[in-house]
Image (tube, one colour):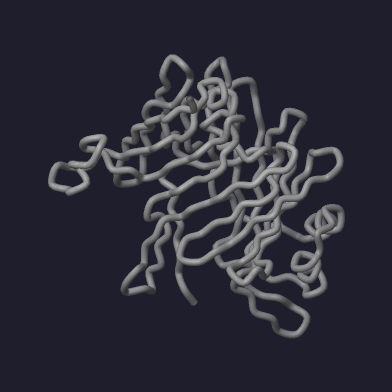
Amino acid sequence: MKFTVSIFLTLIQFGLLGQPCELGKDDIKKNKVRDVLVYTRVPKTNPDYFVEPKGLMLISETIFDNDGKVTQSNCKNCHIEFHREEGCCTDVIQNFFYNNGRLVRVEKMDLYKSTSLYFYDTLNNRRLVIGLDRNDERNKTKIAYFDTHGREIWTMEIDFDNIWTKGDTVYQVFISKTITNYSRQTRATEDFGRGFGSNIESVQFETFKKSNDIDEIEKIFKSLDLSFLESRSKLTTHYDDKGRELKIVDENDGTTLTTYTRNKNGLIRKEEKVMPKFTFDYEYHYRFWN
């Protein structure tokens, strides 16, 4: 079995319309931003120190259309496969497609290709996400629920990229859920999962594997006993009085994981991200539509 990691050095969480949360659509559109380039500072001993902007290494780029919607993102050398001796790292490029302003398709390319398809119910408060592998075979199914403001409040996802079947049971499926609560200036999200996967009945699995019916998939999700899921993270995002993200805090130990500094126009100028052994500082640079 291959071991693959995709590392996104900037936090990318997509709302109902496919907009990264920390890069608010209103600010992007108002400032006529065409693309955002994120750099990390490198030492002078690194050859990349001498590229422009001097002393900075590009780690990601996000491109927007005139309406402020994301059309492409590129995370530099973010895909890593540890079983490869050569060519283990590559960019992760995602292209975003919309219909009537709603995200309907994301095509991702790294060492392989994968696709996510997005379907909505008539009330626009549920979104079904179907994941396809490089052979266009389904490998994950997800339902996301949104409040009246288009904010994600609850998700259920099943990933079956590495399953095996015995009799009427499908093994090594990975089920996860998130629960999100909002106050005036915070968003608290708790993520649940299980590191070694679980098993479900083959009849239930067939629904996740083949159906595009949100009601049918929701019914099966709700019939599952998920008491075995364990809390994996509790994060609280803090906002200013204009709804812009200021910081992200790990509620398990109170550590501030991410801090954003913005310019007078509301655009992120700097980001500080704290890891267990390292602290990363990022600079945001912008190019604009004429």
